[in-house]
Length: 87
Image (cartoon, rainbow, N blue to C red; front, side, top):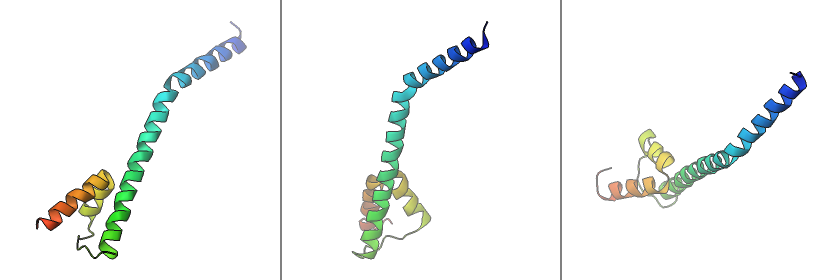
């Protein structure tokens, strides 16, 4: 077989695989971006609550990790725990 034909066939198969998985890759990237933005939004809101409004939630590694991982729902949970006297 001609090496050029083998190269063209391999390139066509690669392009076909990329086209098949492009929807999956776009979905994965959008979910990761949403996860990052949710965490950063929660962190910014936590800092605003602590430094602007004077909410006395301790800024320690566990509290910041909860907010970065779970975002706004994590911050809401921390506020409930704080005002419930458990944090």
